[in-house]
Every structure is written in C-alpha cells, then in structure tokens.
Image (cartoon, one colour):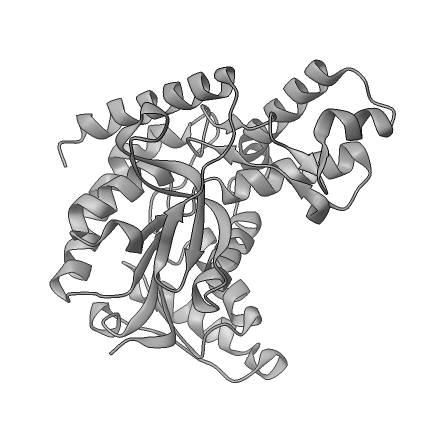
Length: 314
C-alpha cells in the first residue's frame, strides 16, 4: 500500500540535494528517502538536511536503497551527468540514458505503483526513456518539462512590465531546451492581452521585446552554468510545485512533459504541454490556443526530440 506522505529522490547531486532541502521545508512529506550511486553522498546529504527539522517540522529523512521505494507515493529522479558550459541539454542524452538503464529496471522489478517524476536533463528524452524502460502507465510518468522555463518567462515579463509575476498567465511548451516555444498568442496579464498590457505600461516595440525576452529565457540556464557550473535552486522550486499538485490533488494546470498522442499532429514523443496534474498524475492535456507560427515551432520541437528518441533504440 502506498504511503501518500513518502517521497524518494534518486540522485543526490546539486539538483537532488536542493530538491530534498526544498521539500523538507515544504512539509509536504513525512518521510523522504535519498538514493545515490554513492551511498555516502546520500547519507551525508540526509544527515545535513535533518539538522534543519527542528526549524521546519517533524519528518523522517534517510539514505536508503531500492527496497525502500515500493510504498512511496512519489519517486523523483534527478540522477544524471551535469550539463557543462557550452553543452546543450540534448548533448547529455546518451550518458544519461545509460544511467537510466541502471535505475528504471530496479524500479520496475519492485512493481512500483506510485508516480515517477523525471527531472534529469534532457528531461523530455529521459521521460520518454523512463516510460519505455519502466513499463508504467503514461499518466504516472511525468517530466518536470517546461515548468521552470515558464516560471522564468513569467519572471522576465514581471520585470519588464513592473507587475507581480503571479498575475501573468503564459506558457512555454515543447522541449525543455533550445527548441522551446513561448506561447505569446494567448499570454495575458489578469485577462488583459499581453500587447494591450504592454502599451498600458508604455511599451510599443512588441516584436523586439518578445524576441529579446524569449532569447534571455532560453539562454538563462547557459548563463547560470557559465557562472556557477550548475542550476539547481530554480528547478528545486519547480519540483516542489509539481509535488504540491500531486500530494494535495490540486488539479493545477502545469506544462509538464508527457506522452503526446495526436495533438497538433504530434505522436509518440514526450514533450511539454499544459496538463491537469493531481494525485493520479496527469489527468488530461489541456487544449491551448496557438497561432500558425507557434504550431509550426511546436512541431519542429517535437521532430527534434523524436529523431533523438528513435536513435536510442529503447
């Protein structure tokens, strides 16, 4: 029987440890297990994080092994090689698929019935690999997708327009990477069309501004990696948000990565589209209004991902 308050994090590098620390503070779970190829690394991270429990609230956090996963409601996989400066997320694919080939059979062997949240990069391809290697139902295998990219877009727009980012409604869809698609056509600020709100705030060069913001959002990870060699705080917060939706059965709409079947002519590939997320995982995809240019960009993003996925012979 699944314990709805138990989570497992596989991979205790920068992202895994930041995620564990963020989830400890969130109080979403009462038990959290850390797994890593280096058991001492998992032990050290758990030992460090538990010393914050008196400031947060009672919780059990410990280093474990694959036998500890069976009753967890949620497994979060952050394991994988780090993205290096000048290296794209897709450059990581072969190295990290090999790592997944060692992880997913262990999960499948234990007939895991909870939800699998893939965070490692390239997240869309690894979500596809996780589906194929685990044999799990599609609605229970979720990639963190463009949840972080969308947050970055909202932040950039909030800075540009001088408005609370929580009042901005916009999505980035497609690949979490270089072919990501900002959906400008349906973006709005509290129901006011983006262009109208921009003009209300004194901005009229819409095309130039959108292009600059989209480029900055797309390249933000590269900029951070060039300065500090890894990104982990933003994605840890994105993972926490996805976990909230699952644990609390919020049925929130998030642009997570999952298998696509026919939307906009795209089939048999995992990429990010808005979906209702709750305690059972992905309930359904949500139709989103795209213009012709955005549809073409999304299809190109899917084509890029599909060519790579097919080359892996999963």
